[in-house]
Image (cartoon, rainbow, N blue to C red; front, side, top):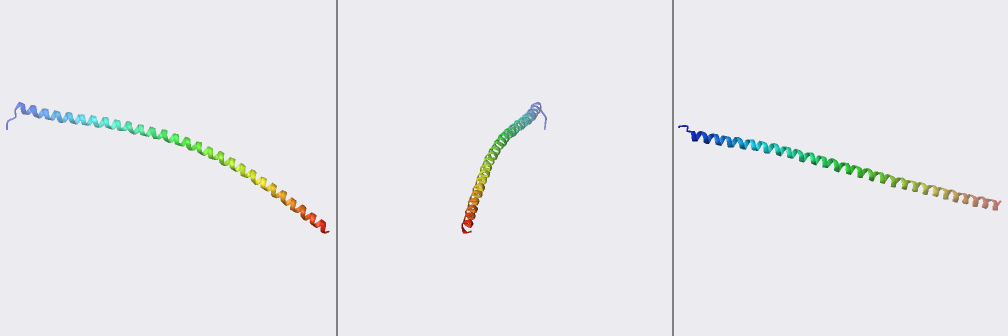
Length: 106
C-alpha cells in the first residue's frame, strides 16, 4: 500500500476534525458545568432568601401567639381572682347567716 499525499491530507483532516470536535465538546462541557454551577448557586441563594423570609414570618407568628397567650393568661388570672372574691363574699354571708341563726337560738 502506497501512502499518497491526498491520503495523508485526508487522515490529517479527519484527525483535525476529531480533535476539533473533542475540543468543542470539552468547551461545551466546561461551559455547561459553569452554567450548572451558576444555576446551583442561584438556587442556593434563593433557598436562603426563602428560608430567611420563613424564619422571619415564624418569629412574628410566635411573638403574636405569645402576646395572645399572655393576654389570655391575664384574663384568666383576673377571672380567678374575681371568683375567689365572690366565693369569699359568699362564705362571709353564709357565716353571717349561721351566726345570726345561732344567736336567734340562744
